[in-house]
Length: 377
Image 1 (tube, rainbow, N blue to C red):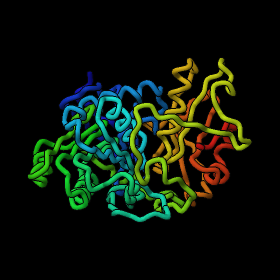
Image 2 (cartoon, one colour):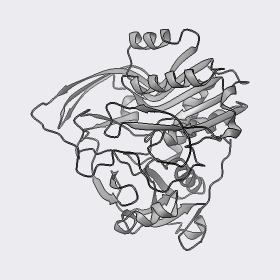
Image 3 (spheres, one colour):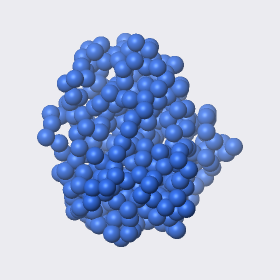
Image 4 (tube, rainbow, N blue to C red):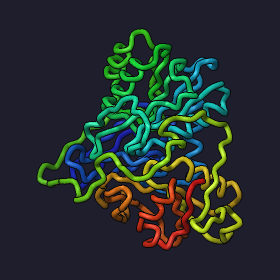
């Protein structure tokens, strides 16, 4: 197992040290160069289903591993709010919430931060300083979820570097939740030092504060200042006004141990294994923040014996090289910005899944890939 590695990127040198790991570094991460002057490097998960296509079963394993440890920190009787951080951790957070419900927690609410404009009340917002798209909106939970009774909050992100984003969320949640007793920060990788973790704990003296991850370590980045960077034109950096749903995580829902999803083609035919060629290989592709329900669809196909992997489009611009072997981009009319798909395998039939008909209709990528398409119902 690697305990240390040096990664040469176009934008500089990234030095990694592993301190503790449930997963070996080489199984969990590869690396890339952001096309973003605010932060020039990127930790690319191999188990997230975002930049690198994954087997659904490997993604499920991470949900189960994290949730098993999280459950040990939470009283079963607590009402628990799992909050995923957009864009990359919307599916990860939902998967952890599902596994917590499977593991016996009585009442688990799931929601995620978002960069979509809804006709709903905003609870609060935060700023992710290093991101090319810094604004996160946190909408008020559906009134049936009784926010005032929430006692535990589990904040889920793909990686924690400085902790500033999750600190903002924690501060706002502490102010908004009168019964809050426990905060857990969950991530695939956590780069915070012992001293940083202790400082965050001391900031919440009346709350049980815990960190859970698959890998803990530290890193240093030495920027190549001669390599000039600027964001690409038409980067999707703001709040999207695209038609989007408010029932799949943005305003919260009660997590189910066995959620069911249905996708229908634009022609009104339900998409399932009966509509597919059992001898074909498939890549199921989620779109932006919309990853959990497409993941569940891909997982169901895999369980029925289909050769399928999963990944998602995203708004983050990353340079080709290192862990990014290929890059495709398209201007999304609904989002009014450029979106990307990285490391798409060849010789697989693409299935792109959308949350709304409007997002399907406005996305040219489905035509470029000659993809099978369907919309969540």
